[in-house]
Image 1 (tube, helix red, strand yellow):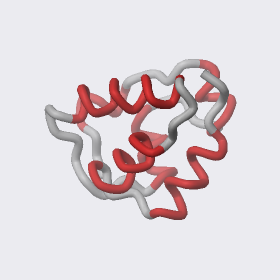
Image 2 (tube, rainbow, N blue to C red):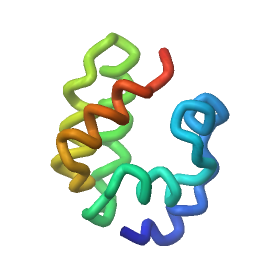
Image 3 (tube, rainbow, N blue to C red):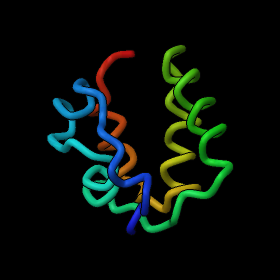
Image 4 (cartoon, one colour):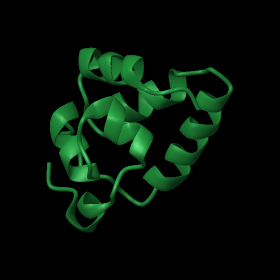
Length: 85
């Protein structure tokens, strides 16, 4: 899925180290994103990030699967690689 202008976003170094990619587009390709991000994704991503900081992966998993169309197995694998926040 082409992320358009979002695709060129450079990932933080911790994510680059964890996933072996440097841009949002490369990560989307690696994860198998099938749905185009919409404007509501920003607030959902912020909420997922805050939940991850509390140790709750549920909102991030839901975002990956429901909002971005990532398979359950790819979402689980991605979350397993996520560095500590």
